[in-house]
Image 1: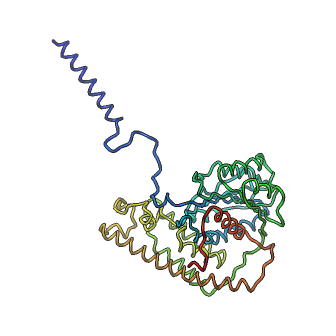
Image 2: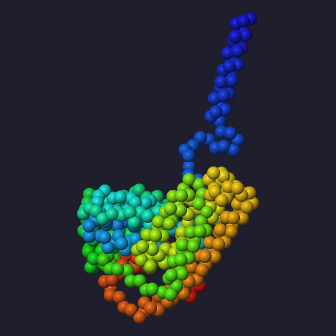
Amino acid sequence: MLHYILRIIVIVSMIAIGASVQAKTRPSAGELPSAPAAAPERPVAETDRPRIQIAILLDNSGSMSGLIEQAKSELWRVVNELTTARHSGKQPRLQVALYTYGDPPPKQLCPLTDDLDKVSEALFAVSIYGGSEHCGQVIQTATQKLAWSTDPNDLKLIFIAGNEPFSQGPVDYREACKKAIAAGIIVNTIHCGSGVPQDWRDGALLADGKAMNINHNAKVVYIEAPQDKKIAELGVELNKTYVAYGAHAAEGLGRQSSQDANAHNLSASSAVQRAVSKANAYYRNSRWDLVDAVSDGTAALSKIKDKDLPENMRQMSPKQRQEYVKQQAAKRKQVQKQINDLNTARTKYVAAKRKETTTGSGKRTLDQALGEAIRAQASARNFKFKTAADK
């Protein structure tokens, strides 16, 4: 009898252990089977939008200080060139990546990102150093390492700027350019100096791109307009509408303020162009700003913990919190409208003044080369740009 009882106890114990193990490994109701953790999905409204992806590869060797200064000062002007772009009626998402390649191996300063303050921060951190410019290697690296879209309707562009022979380095530029276009990435070359050498021209032709040259030492022409001071002031006012939250709150606010200061210290033109960028859809800060996060669906206010909210919101009721974020969004739209209205008048004023002046063909700068190629290549992919007549 004892033997029989012990046998029953052993069988029951084995069943219990098996059930326990199964409970630990079986997904609970509504849970998917075990799988690698995935990044949170973007809202449908975000993933459904076409993308313009741009990787800028800059020679930062000793003779290229003028090129780096142009990139710093004209980033926001290039962004603003794209604000009216539409594809099938939708405004695309803009993502920018940055590399330097004057001191091999190539350095990725930021990956493809829609956080334009990060791109600006990276540009202002570029140092002039080195003397070996391996064009094929940096093109290959950008092609392989960046998170390029696989959608054939998205626009994927590389811009490489420098002044040394295109053939330097361990990677054949011809193979690098062929692999880029095979992945749907257009390679544009920007030679810093007079004319376009044959190897710089060949690199662009192999990847369906445009070969251009610029005067990298030219100062970007700034035409002062009556609206400039007010636009720059409103750009600062926009910052008051941001509601920083979560782990990246202080970092985001600090970066925004720093890039305002960098633009202001460079030139009045840069400050104005940055303010205009902040008044448009490409300038998004969902990672740390509640207004943007709630607007694009990346955060639900009701699910955010009190400790992750700014101090002034922690004692608010759920309804008060919703109303506060709504009010900040309304204020932002109001200030953005003021900036855009002023910029419409400014654009007309500057265009009229520009007709009164003439610039030599050798005075083209980085922003002009980028803007010209992006518009042409976007248009070839069925992106449409509004004109003044459309507004």
